[in-house]
Length: 623
Image (cartoon, rainbow, N blue to C red; front, side, top):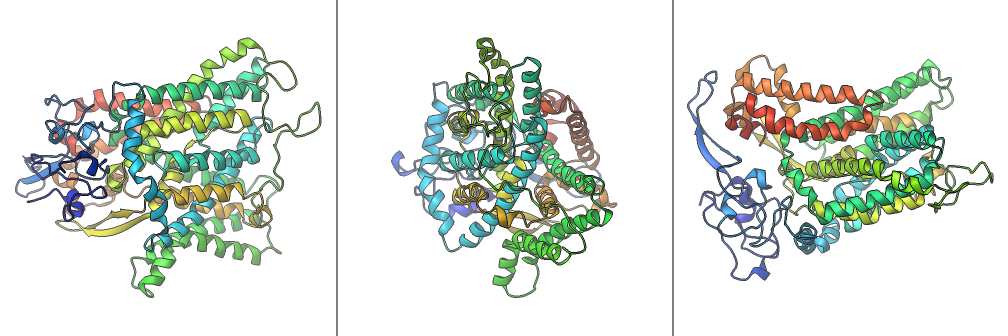
């Protein structure tokens, strides 16, 4: 039979627990085992039911009508998204999560209608793959990717932890700092890598969390309550609310988030990473008594780090050397780039001095208690450190805890949605409810009691992790042009676990880490920002603006099926939305509202875009 392209990899093998059943192209037949036990649960990357129809080619194409096979939301079909049965399995749409499941199971973002129903479904889906999450990393074909990714993302996480740690210390009167940020990232990252539903996501401090912490610190100063004890209660309330969200399947609301919102969120985070790196480089010219020579060398190191890493990344596609050497250089490009530019900095150490990493040399809390003259204890007394904590403040902290809960809900789910999107062709299913359960039990309480910054799934680090573990193929497009598509992602937990273990040991390695220039890691920030743009259709469509002749456009599906001006209109609308959100994040008083602004894009997509574009156009552009 003419199978759907996404099924061809699996259709050639018989049905087994490692190779679940598939749908045929007309989605009318389901090849199933007679015993349900032989097919525990189906990976998310299998078949996505589609609707085939003939769409008239836009008049400016000058070609015959073409058949377009896409995923559309067939709202006229009364499909129950909660329970998967043989009767409705073939009618599930992209709006209902596009995941082929065992009969009687629920889709990852469906509301089960049962207490802990989503969590139990996540465990049933993800459980059969837990052993392979650890074993697959050590397969001969994956060992190189595992080691190179661990080295790359370790430096990315370390630089982010140190950068955010310095900012936390500056805005909280040193009550939070680099030591706390490193410890928070490592402890919560280890917990998440062990029990999380999507181990490709990387936990760490984020910009919205920093902004929210600053607001909360100012509130504590205004009401004359101690900041660290107040954070204990804020964190415990947030943990409770997050558990309730997981228990009552509230992650199901994220099914309304489509590619429209995902692309804007992903593009914003990538651009903010690049923008912050350039801002940090510019400050080296006139801050702290740095000379122009210092700023110039720092700039050269940053751009050299980025350029070398990008060049070595492209070596894989060249004809230089042997295939094994090309693969080695491509996989370890970032690590090689860091080492090369550290050597360059060392060569010029006598003539020019550039700022180095400021890693804590001792493992102790940042804040020194002014009354005792000693560093605070690691365990925070929730009833007060130097004075009694008022009872009214315990319950008043519920209000900021609700905001923190929503911030964590959006940060965590939006990032895991980007990781799980169909473009990555992941073979293992997602577990959104389980992710929040781990956050409620193993992230917020630990950070609250130890006085650490709260962590969430960090978008750019998570996407860099996925991209580093991905093998790509260059595919020729019908009608001309090429594109890069995912061939395989090495899904496992080992890299996430080892990265955060190394992060915990970084203080022990501080004498070596302080020899790394800050600007080298800023180059890595730029590298992560640009590489995370790969595969984002918004940037692909923006690139089309640089192609003056429309007949020279790459033959993407949306280029063939949608009128050019309608396609550009959709892109401009996305850019306007992104510009508005970006502008508001640059206003200090509004930067805390970043996740709320992203959430506001959902009703924009649901109620405004359908008035501007036809359902067929949205089915292609926002599939």
